[in-house]
Length: 318
Image (tube, rainbow, N blue to C red; front, top):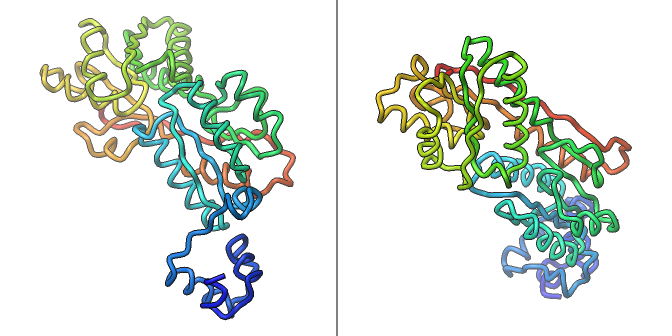
């Protein structure tokens, strides 16, 4: 083996380094790493056996990489796993459960160290595959009543109710929830449901506006047409939609929040710096990622459901 010859160690030491670098002595590990770098060596896990691939690779499947909070979660998860010698392979479904099943089948063929899914809504085929496998599975961003294996997240209906209570406290009694692709984005649909129920229980007028297009500023701008002139405040399915509402309201000289209050979800980077700063819900993506990583790395724990935090961030838009 070229790496072994160049580093002056045995092939078994190189193999151990590739599988579990922390187990190799501090004296020879740098020599192996230098040889790998010099030779440009990339381990062929298929040729070396699926068990090697399974010991190092975590398959992470998200609905969309366009949504920044999923990207942030994946980035934080990669950071947490890489500290322990695990790498990630990321797939995205564009909210298609059938595509999720195809990605799960492909991932299982590589015997991954773990599979991380987003949410708890899956095809029967996906669920049956994962219930039968010995591969650790983590569902993130939601808390199902019966996790496949482990689940890390929070109840999205409570998020919607929290925003509704904020609106009620501010005196907004005629409101709307603006949601993008609610028929596919079950988490946003849950937030909408919680929001609508809380407003109606308080005796407030609330309407639900849904657009089948993906979340974008254009989608938010378009949905502003549907709310009517008497709506006093809008909660949006995420910050991108809310930003579109802000842009369109400003084009129409609608003063925010005096004429129309606007709130989002996600607390994305721009939320604190747009004009006016956006009231939103912060879902703690870093906490989700850290807890998911712990579920993968600490399998001896009997706990299977982990609730993470969310926080309402009030700013000048609402």
